[in-house]
Length: 418
Image 1: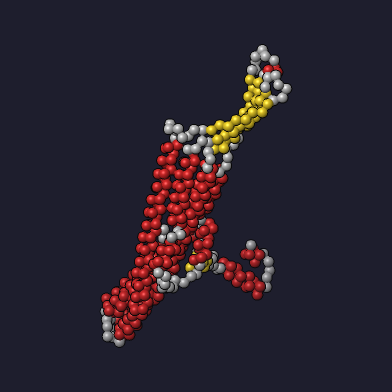
Image 2: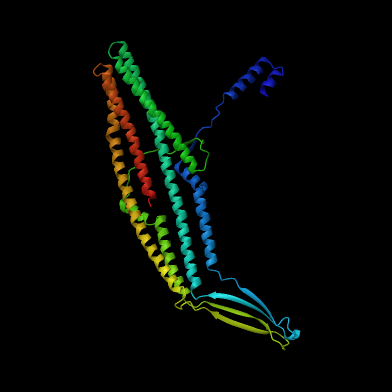
């Protein structure tokens, strides 16, 4: 459309040049949008709002609540209509008929026990939903930390590539003056190529972490995101006892306690089911020879305590489930404590490694590469020693990033261990 308007109309030279420049600017505009900067809290909020696992857990809890309302409700009443002596030679006044309403009441205490069971099941579903949310929070945090580490690794390798390129030019200059061997140039090029290969791998890892984080947030895999939070080292100040106390309310332990409460309610329901279940009925009955129908009522009860009924087996099943729930609670308590202790120890170990890099190794490596560069320019060391210093700097900086990532991942495990 723009080209046709330019060709189909007469424009002044100045206006024509303006339209041509405008068209070029539109064609040369960047097609890709800038990466969206997201904090960790942003990523967690989007995941908890959009992840299907959490929605499924919420629907399951709604279903559990609906089942609870069913368990505490009375059985539906029934209506019976009867007619007798039809088709006999008797007169119509002597025919019999009745209409009766029957309502089952159940065993005393059974509905209360079922309500306790439904409350425990609701608590169990709530703990399951919280467990899913905690798991997603941990997975998103790990993905975000890996995204941060990958971004830092890319920037570190880009800086190392520039340093390696400068050293390569320096060695080539020394070669032209006879102060270096061609083997030193090959070593410099090889080291730069190794760093470039690491940089390519780091960029691929960065894209992988972006896709993983997008998957948690239910976003397109190609969506460009960038970590807005900085990956700074923050020492661990809380004690192990603090984390153990906090872990006592983890969803897994709450679920185990709810399962035990459901088992206790099941034992109570089995005891209530061993009592006679009542039902009553009332209705109208037509009496032959009477001008108006008469009222009738009745009470019916079961005998579940007799030895050939299933009440004994039901009680044994409920006690077994109660004992199993108690054993699972003990297992959960031991597992959570062990996981918290392991995560705390890992965090302390990684913290010591990061402190070692921050206090000594990073500064010493930077001083070493500066000193080696000056000594190489002065002819005091050869190219092999210079490149060995560069390899040491590369190793220290990358290992520092890995130690920092290990520390952040250990802190995440400590926060979500269950």
